[in-house]
View 1: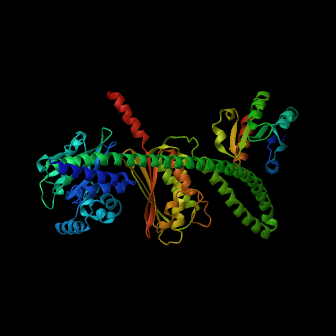
View 2: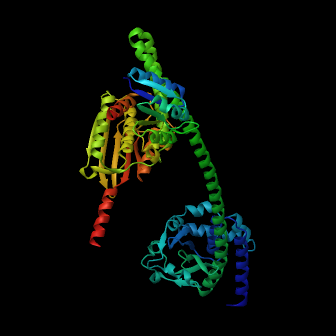
Length: 462
Length: 120
């Protein structure tokens, strides 16, 4: 290597170094680095990609690829850059004039940025621990370097990104379009530049981590404040509800007495009191709902019970109250006949879901509610579905939120209670919503009986 | 001879409701707004059954329950409260029954009938 070339190389690295050190955004930095690797006045490769080391997953994740998508495009870019003559103002050009949008939209980048290579497998990326850059060819590619094979990497340069002795990623670059052979000089320059870049990338990553951490801390703090508010609000609600409930017990109690007295003597008064009672009952039921919601997390009494019977009994009870012509269908699996849980609470879940469906199909002639049970892996699944047209998409985010109701007379607690109870059973509830057709609530509760049995079996054999 | 029921509840309307409804059922009813006055008057009244609210100022129904059971272990006591969570509380276990307050007194009346029959 002659002295002039060495001077040129150092001047270049100095310029690129300035560009890198002035970049404060991690994403932009990656563009600056790869542009520097690919422009003719920079390192002059045709294509370059950065992979970053994902420590928790032990994978190399493709984050950015910079390359023209065709030889025509390559030629156009090179010509335009040649006319620009950016030597001597490389840093400012890199900082201000990269077309980030275009780089992101290239097919090359799209392929690179969705690639993820496991370091547990056979791959050239295992070389990120080496403190040198390499020239590889297709024969060096490992079984899991399919992505590079797809992109037709034949002869290519590989430079690990090492910061503070730790590998943080790698740059891969080749001359796909002009087929210029990669020389030892190219490799040396790339290695030096990769080291510079690595330190800058790591710094920005640390800053980003720090930013995220403090953001998370702030969020958590706000969460705590929010929770405390909710807690205080909850207590206030419980106290108020208690007072209202007690007042109503007296009021409704005497109302009943007055109603009975007026039944024979004054039918008009009786009729009016009937209405007062109906309205007061509504408020009274609301206090029960709130109370049930508030103690959702309370100890439940769990035992093995006959789920099938509970479902059939509940449907029967609802049919008796609800005289409308809703049709109930059941599809109850014999493998889901028993459930370990609190039967009262599960009954409440069924009642609330069925009530919900009943209201959804209230105006339909052929209203249908289907209740199914089955076993799935370690879960007993209960589904309640209706043909009531589904839930309007704009209400979906609020379905399980307390005190949110789309109904004129709803307390907005029905589905929140359902969710509380399901969570109390370590289960999950989800909703399949078919807009225009119907809604299907799916409850999965761990089949503890099965697990217990298995444990016993395990103990027996071991 | 009419059976006598002692009602202890700090809510005036509820107390009066119990009085009216239980008198209609054919019982003698004496009622008290707090546990202390009820305990003071207990020996004097010798009720056949006590209906005791739990959440009350001055002395809670749970403390009153213990004192009354020490005084007269055979007099049945029904605990009544707005909420069911006291059911899990050990100290309610010595009560003879536990009911959740409601404007519908059917359950209460049945419990009273049942306990008085048992005690005969």
